[in-house]
Each structure stands twice: as C-alpha cells, then as structure tokens.
Length: 143
Length: 182
Image (cartoon, rainbow over all chains, first blue to last red):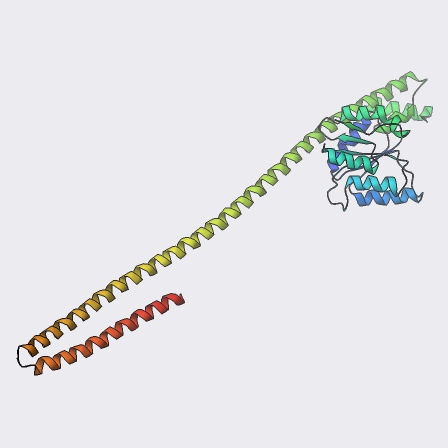
C-alpha cells in the first residue's frame, strides 16, 4: 500500500472517482487532492521547508484548467526545484507521444491514461510502485 | 494497527446489533480485530458494507462524469451552431445590402435611359422643326416669294429652339451631376 498520495486535477468529480478507486483497490488510505497547479506548488514549498510531510506519490493531470502552468511543468518543478524524492507521474486522458516525451524529460515516472475503466490501470500501477519508489522502474504508459 | 478496548468493542457490537450502524471508511482497515471472532466478523461486515457503498458511489460518480462530458460536448455543439448562425446572418445582411445597392443602381440606370430617350426625342423634334423651317425659308427665298413673315418666324423659332436645346442640355448635366453625388 502507498503511504500517501496527492492528486492534482481540476476535475472535482475525478477526485471522488480516484479516491473510491484507491480505497477499493487498497492503494492508499491517505489521499489528498488539489485542483490547481498553484495550490500544488504551495504544498511543494511547505514540504521543502519541512512544514508538512511529503506524500509518497503525486498524480498530476496534464491540462489543469485554470492554472498558469500544466502538469508536466508542475512535475518538472517538483523534481528540479523541490527535490526528487517523491514518485510522480501524469494521469490524463491524452495519449500524445510528444507530451509523454516531455513528461519523461521533466522527470515523470509513469503516465496513466484516464478513462472510465481506471481501476485495472491503477492495479497495474500498484504492482509497479515499489520499483518506482526505488527509482528502478522504467517510464511506463498504462493504457 | 489500532487496538480497540474490550468495552469499546462491546459498545460497537451492541450499536450494530440494535441499529445496524457500523464503522465506515478507511479507518476500518487499520483496526486490529485478531483474537476476537465476533469483533473480526463485525469489522469484516463493516468493510464489506463500506466497499459496497464505495462501489455504488464510484459507479454513480462515473455516470455523472460521463453525463458532464456529454453536456460539455452539447454545449460546445450549441456554441458552434450559434457561431455558424451568426456568420450566416452577417452574410445574409451583406447580401441584402448588395441587392439593395444593385436595385438602386438599376433604378438609376432606368431613369437615366428614360431621360436619354426623352432628350433624344426632344432633340430630334428641335432639329426637325429647325430644318423644316429653314427649308421653307430657303424655298421662299429661291422662289422669290414674300419672306418677311417666314424670316421673322424662322429667327424667332431658331431663338426659341436654341434656348430650349440649351435648357435640355443643362437639365441632362444636372441629372448626371446629381447621380454622381449619390
């Protein structure tokens, strides 16, 4: 089980879907969600200064509507400005290779395609998580 | 794991038996129920109930999510159709203006042609009267007849015809100028 997860996604309904899926699949018991890149970056700053505990894993939506930068930029900031101890990846309905290459360059460790049937992908991710945690897992796209 | 006191266990079991209300949420997965069969069954039941509720909520949330996506698509389609209608309206407005302009030009052209015909007929009449009077005057001169009356008539007639001709030319120029101004 993953100790704690942060989800960054502008779609509030997906927060509920993700929370229930994670609970049903025993992925984590501690899930928090934010709706914008700015809110997430604010949390990163607090982790960086040691005010709050870092989550073990961060799931970021690619296009976060209403935010000044996208999910890939957020992952880049997380990896290059706030330390890279957190497992981070993209969760998006997009399957564009160019964006996936950008995400890999920014330090994303996985890319999960968001669709109606998200549970099997999350289950696969759960199996691979120990490798990501040890930084041994290859960048993987869960389709 | 969280260990629960015997008293609390009994209270929880009693509430569950009497009202059917049990513990809910992820906290259930952290409770240590080993060594107490009745409490283990209680926790297992509560976890099952919680899972059922979550499954149901997940299905409903997904349905709402799908409906939301469809609504967004429908909204985008309505916006696209509205934009098309707006563009069509602009085109119709432009076509209407063109037709009005063409009609105006056509009306002016018809008016101008009518004036041309009137002027041409008037000029033919003027020239015809002038030529006829001149011929009569010349015939009178060459045949040695009295030219006193026809002479003065010819000069009067010629003066009037010239005046009228200039008046017509002036009118034509005025009409042309007025049309150009429009």
